[in-house]
Length: 101
Image (cartoon, rainbow, N blue to C red; front, side, top):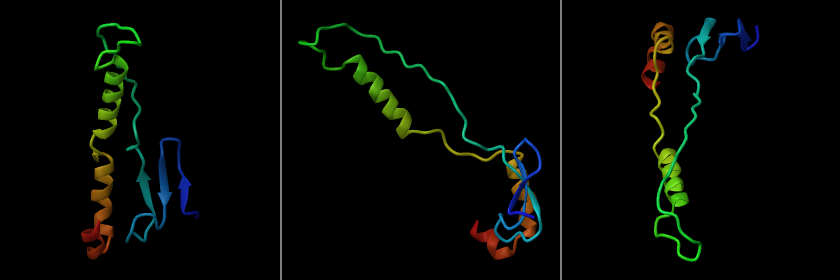
């Protein structure tokens, strides 16, 4: 069997040697992927002329908002069924491997 063999189209793989310390084949659930989102940022303010731009331009406000979003990403988290999978696999691991994970 290859290191990872796709079982179906729902991102579940039958693996060997992928999870540290687990020597038996294990079905890995792959549902915790990066998500995607769409966001529209709108800035309103006073208009102006390029010869007399305000101290805070709307383009600058949008740029700051984008930088704030990038600097403060959503926290990573693990939920069921992936956390259940690790709870199920943990007894298959040697004790010291479980401590190091």
